[in-house]
Amino acid sequence: MKILAITNQKGGVGKTTTCVNLAASLAANYKKVLLIDLDPQGNATTGSGVDKSHLQHSIYHVLIGKKLLNEVIVTCEKGGYHIAPSNRELAGAEVELVNELARETRLKQALANLEQKYDYILLDCPPALNLVTVNALTAANSVMIPMQCEYYALEGLSDLVNTIKKVRMNLNATLEIEGLLRTMFDNRNMLAQQVSTQLVSHFGDKVYNTVIPRNIRLAEAPSYGLPALIYDKTSRGAQAYLELAEEIILKNQ
Image 1: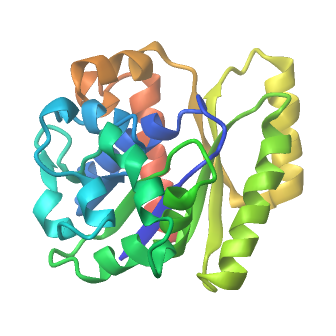
Image 2: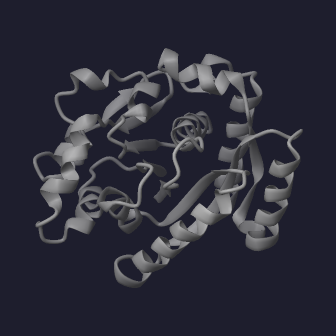
């Protein structure tokens, strides 16, 4: 079972888009996939066709110890994967857990008690280096960092790499960076090409070969509660995420 935390403290880099579309693309490759929405905005939840405003239970109840993970999981019928949904309630978990023992390992414990077996568990982290993100990094085997190839990208990346190092030292000795994913990429943009070249020279084979293009279908799909693969399989965005899924499967064989 591969547990992959998908994180970047910078917002608007295509993190949730990556989680939803990678989940659907892995499922299309006959893998059993669970997506855990750890962002209080609940965008991965709505992007998977789940109504976050009418949730009886969510990942929030799991983190505060009121529910087992099995009890909150719902099926994304069209995407072919399962999701542990989220909504605004999750924002309260940070405050409620602050004085609790072993607060950084709540998610890890929840995953240890998971009854159903999955090939891949994807953790959609909030755009912040907070206690929920630390929970994700403590529970994960490895980290995927989606990032836009723009001026401030490398600056934010160093903060995240330092956080990963601290988690590795104190909470999860086996945590590693699985890969950096170039998202919302515009080939015509010279700066994007320069930053992309810098990334490859710094991180080598840690940079995925697959590049996710800037694509209108990827932007439209969440408003229909669908992964792009279901909304428009022929789109460049959907095809790129299928390539990414295949690259990840090959990497982990």
